[in-house]
Each structure stands twice: as structure tokens, then as C-alpha cells.
Image (cartoon, rainbow, N blue to C red):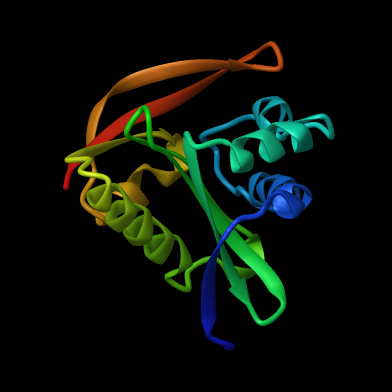
Length: 159
């Protein structure tokens, strides 16, 4: 496998982030969510402008993982909320340590900003992953996305 390279997201990457999130959700193979829930969770085309605004803002720190010339995944740190807002890896690149590297890099960026702990609102299928990198359950949360209630787990870690 080619080595993984990490870089800061640019506004021109918004479509790629949208596509990566879409592919990652399409690749979820779990009984934790119904087909209807997964369909609602996938961003529509209008979400590309949301990605652009997030990348341009000072509130979010978006990081892209690339393998060769392909986007393998991305992660977003919400600086103001001291929260990891997203970690998505394209299904072709799962189980290669990319998500772990993305989380570690966001944790390091948080420490550099004197953030002492992070929260993640984890999908049910990702709870075991976040536990493996040191996050602990801190409650349940339901988000309504496109009119559908989806269950998530709040997780925290002291840095």
C-alpha cells in the first residue's frame, strides 16, 4: 500500500469531503442502523456549501488523509466546542490505521490549542473504535437528520 499523507483541507476539497462521507456511510455494514437511517444520514448535494463554509471558518480544523492521489478519509476538529465533529474513511481504506492517525492528529492539534479534553458524538458502529483509542462513553444522544431520528453515543477523552 502507498503511504498515507495528511494535509489541511482547502475549500476546493469540499466536494471530495462530501463524496468521502457519502461513500463511508454507504459502506457501513451493520445492524445498528436501518437502510432508512443510513439514507437520511448521507448528505445531499447542497451540503457541499456547508463543507466549504466549515473549511473557510476559524471554528473548524479539517484534515484530509490521502493515499497516492486518492482521498482515503478526513476528520474535523470543532475548536470552539472542543469536539471531533467527523472522522470518515472511504470503505476501500478501512482497517489500515487511517482513522486512528486522523484522531491522533486532531488530538495533537487540540493540545496545541490548550484543549484539555475532547468529545465525540459517535455513530453506534464506531463506538468500539473510539474506545480502542481511549474514549469513554458519556451518554446517548439522538440527532434528527433529514427528518429521521438517529441514535448516537457521546464519548469523551481527557488529553
